[in-house]
Image 1 (cartoon, rainbow, N blue to C red):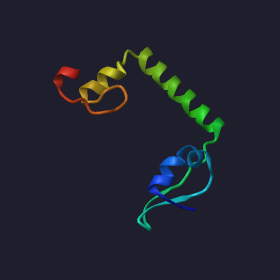
Image 2: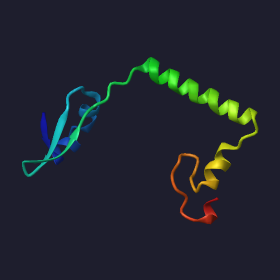
Image 3: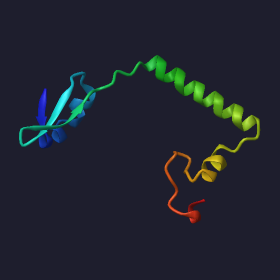
Length: 87
């Protein structure tokens, strides 16, 4: 399916919940492609559980994950810190 930028924005919720690949156009020229990803709920749950267990193991070993990230210049979400005052 092809949608102009404006129509893509207007139908974003529909597109996000759909299964069809969408070419986004601007003045008739394709400027991007949206390919929805099928998420397997069981696989996502298992990944989240694995991550939770890993975080618990690191805490049990006395590893401060937020501190390690801050030392690398990242906030807890992995976003670069702007300056030293954020640490």
